[in-house]
Length: 296
Image (cartoon, rainbow, N blue to C red):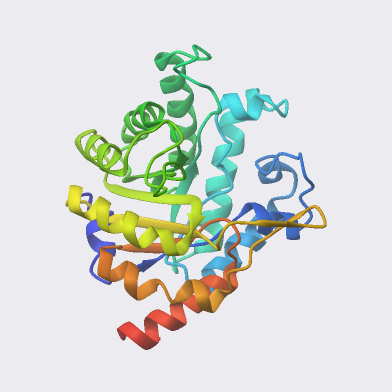
């Protein structure tokens, strides 16, 4: 086990952060704009979001680099700024974290489909390697490959990220099948957990795709297939469209009430994804402090 993970696990659960996209929108990011461009053009906006999560009690925050590969940045005319965008993203979260939190930099899917021949394995590996090296240079303490649906892409990203020597979390999306226990590619929780464990992940997890209540079962299934720590970032329910806006109905307290069931199912890292905010992290911290007895 990587020393960084081993040290974190001395105080379980580890509180991570919540959604970034909606928080950046609250700060002025417009629909269709590149969130990652803010790292260069308006870093103070990004740092405001990062600081809010640190102040809410997150022991790990991510970075504004989810779409930081050359493939995703290309859509916004930024393919030649991969190193600059990602290094800046890591540095911003590093400043916000100070000595209160660690920074696990975000690595998201490329949007390219291996099975459709959109891209080769070597091209994916090179793209993820380029991003991972820049994030490490920017001061990241770890890397989190998140919101992955394609297991093969996730494993390629893992191999690339392991090249930095940093601990690597791999977090899949399970939002398909009758029990919402498969990726959209049809990969089961059991298969992904086993293959990612064998491929060298330091932490296995799941984020997005469904409301927090569904993650209790997902967590238990992952725990049964691996001895690795488990990372959970559930949504605040599924969104409902109201006047053209996605509204999440789960409240912060309702969300936080799942902290103990998740712990009982084996979760080591707990945070939020779509529809959550610093208020959700505060509620999680209060619930954990009250119910589990961690220091305030």
